[in-house]
Image (cartoon, rainbow, N blue to C red; front, side):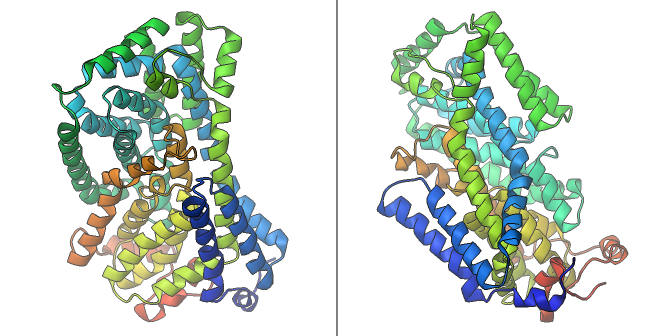
Length: 508
């Protein structure tokens, strides 16, 4: 039964109350990480979920409704969790099959150390556009690139920064990506116009990042100073323990082909698992039970080379459980914040302070990032601001393509830069950065993922200068009228957010 407007307004928290669970949760995470030196934000997020639930009860929400909000967001995220499970299997099986070792071997023998970081970013971009998934790219090609970087004696955080830059930027502009489809869907635009409007920030950010990685590569290492003894020890260890052949790259090629043919990501990745398992048995002499074990528990080997052992002893479904549990708790927290209308209240407070396109565009991007930071969910960080800010853009006479770009850059690109976010937790786990084990210096991958944070800055600059910020066309206005889309003027910005979630607003 639909609730009336009065009952909904009674349940809406004040700004101070809405901020309470957010600030207390961030404080708990800060204590856990910086005071105790323990990067396991699971319990602080679970405490945040409990605090949010208490706020909801104080507002008159029944636990059943709060529970529905928690499980709704978790349910929406289950396809991503399924991708995580498939990636875990792929990592274990592709190492056993020789696919990952062959990628590392050929990378060490063919790539120039000085160009490695730039090449890593470009390769991850191409693969991510093809696959339509940044996570799949990080877990396959990204893992192999970490091994190549280790061979070149490049710090892990530099390699991880380049991998993240390429993988998440490819995901941002791929028509096969779920987030690239979600952003235009919630803002009322079409996907190809959305991708075209992303290019003015995407291309400069990628070129700037490419230049930085080239300079960094030549500064840290070149062909004359590279440790060829280290490279030779790694390639020898790979040759001694695996059959190395270009044919072993076929499982990876199969996944890319299926993705290009627009097969759904989960069947495509699972096909890669099956292909890798068959290759492991036929080429590497691995038994069926061993393949199943590697898919579940990950690959295990002792090559005698410590750098290789730490890289190759990984993968499997169980290795993903730390990340999956973190994601589920973070998503539950985000779902509770949304259901109790805490996020809505905070966003309305922000929107009430902005009166121009410059302010709205900047606020939309920062709101998307803040949702990533607090709720830990890239999908919520796109969907929630997209719904709430859209009426304001229409009222200002600007195309909602501006909004779809803002939330894509604050959502998709910022996701891997928040360690307790779904994207950040995945990157840390799959690339073996060992943050939970005390290798906190590897969090330097965050500022070194240049493409991810340069693009939002370029977007904000464009909005301040009034360039690459399209106004609404007559066709768009006609579509708004046809679809009865909500439009808010600068005088009722506060009502715009409410309009997007079911309260009243002036229609076209």
